Length: 319
Length: 319
Image (cartoon, rainbow over all chains, first blue to last red; front, side, top):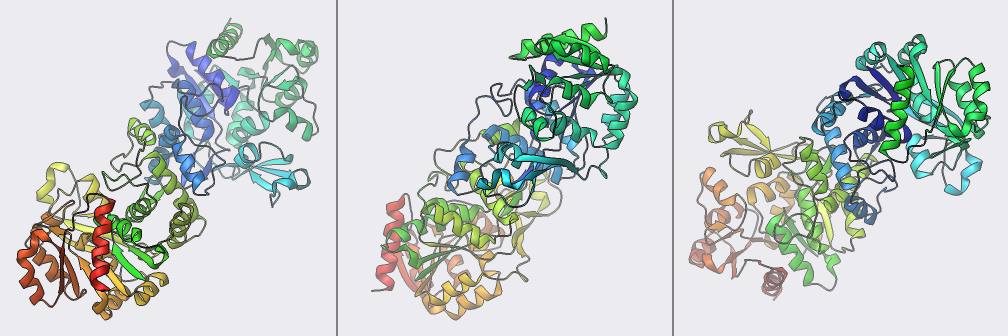
C-alpha cells in the first residue's frame, strides 16, 4: 500500500504515473486536498479531487492540468452573456461531475462516498480519498496595497479567488485553514497512512496543497509518527516552481525560492527527499538536514515521465 | 397594458405572438406559473419562466416548446455516465440560465429580480412576472395502482416528476398547491392585473398552469373582480389538447375532454372565450354560459400563427 498526499497539478500528474506502475492500482491511495473546494452557483466544486480523478480516468486536459480534454464551454458562455460570475471556468462535461456531486451531497452522501462513486463509474481502481468530509477552507490574508487596482475589498480571500480570479497577483501575508481545528480526518485516510509501506508527499505546493491536508491534526500527527516511511518530492526544479505561485509565495513569506526552502519546510515530516538533477548542487546541505536524498529528473512533461519518476522512487525505496 | 396568465407550452407561444403585435412590448406582461419550479442538483429551475423568456428572446427550441434551439447536452451526458439523475434534461446553454438564477437567489435576489435581469440581458422589453417570489409547488395525488410498474412509492408527487419523469402516465386523483395559502403575489403582478385593459388566460392547461397562479388568493380575487376584462383562450381544439396531459386529466377528474369542460371551468373568471373553429358546434352552449364568444383558428404552428391569433383577439376586443 502506498499513500500520496496531493493537491492538483504536479501531484495529480505524479499519481497517474504511480498508478501506471502497478498491475493492481488498488494499493495506491491519493489523499487529496479539499481546502480549495468552493460553492459556486449552488454547486459544490472540488477541483483537486476532480484533477486526480480526471488524470486517473485518462480524461484530463493535460495541457492545462485541470478539466476534461476536448471540453466545450456552452454553459459558461450563456452564464457570461447573462452577466453572471464566470471567472471560474466550468466545462460542460465537467459540470456533469459537479451536478452529480451536489445532488448526492444534498441527498446526504459524504464527499468520500461521492468521490468513490465517481471514481468507480469512471473505472478507477486506485483509491481517491478526500482529506476530510468536513468543510475546511484555505484562506489567504493578502496585502491590499499590492492589488488595489483589482478593486478588491477585505483582506482575506478564499483560495480560488486568489488562484483563479486574481491569478495569484495579490501579495500573500499569511495562510490559514478555516475549520481545520474541528474537521475530522476521514477514517479511510488515517487507515491508508497507517497501512502504507510508503507515504509520498507529492510535488505539490507545500503551503497551498500539502498544508491544508496537514492542518488536520490527526493526519499531521500520523505522518510525523511515520516519518521513517515518508518521502517528499520537491516541487521546485532549478530554483523555480514549474507552475503556480510557489516561487512568488516563498519570497512573499520571507524564504528563498529554492529547493533548500522546501527541504527545510518538510524536514520534520519526511525522511526521503527527491530533488531534480537541476538542484544537485544543494545535495550536501539537504543531506545534512537528515534526508535520505534521491536525485533524478522530476519534470513530468507527459504520462511516461510521471511513470519513470514513480518507478525510480519505487526502485530506490524498495531496492 | 395587457396581462397574460400563462404556464409553458401554448401560453408561452401565444405571448411571443402577442408581443410581436406591439411596437412597444413594454405594455405586455406575462404572469407566469412557478408551481412547476424545481430544485435539482442544487440548481433552481423555473421551466415556465424560461419557456416564456426563450420564446421572447427568439431562443426557444420551437419543436419541443422548451429549452434553447441548437442546444448541446454534454453536461447531461456526463451526469448520466456517472449514474446521476438525468431524467430532467438540461441543455448546456440552458444550464447557464440555471447557474445564473441559483447564484443570484443565493445572493439574496428575488425570483422576480432575477427573471427581470435575465430578460433585460436578452433584450426582452415585455415584462415577465413570476406569480410569486415564494415557493409554491404543484403536487399531484396519483393512483398508485395505475403505475405500480414504475416502481414509485408514495402517492403524491411533484409536477416535474409527474410531467417529465413519469410522462403523465399515473392517473391523477387530485391536485394541490403547496404553500399557496402563505405565498404572496408579487406586487408587480397585482399592479399589472389592475392596470391592464385586457387580461388573457393563455391557452395553457387550466389545472396545471392556470390554477397554480390562481391558487394565490389575491390574484384570483383580482381576476374575478375584473372578470369583465378577462379573456380566456381554450387549450382544447376539436375536443383534444394539442399537447400535454389535459385531455387525459379532464377524463381522470371526471369531466369530458371538450371545450365545454374548459368553458365551464373558467366561467367565473373570464367573460370572453376564444375557441377554435373545430369546436364551433359548441358555440350556443358556451354562449349560454354568459361568454362573449370568439371563434378562430387557435392552432399555433409557428410564430405567424401566434401573431395572427393575438391580432384577431386585439381587433375583436378593442374594435
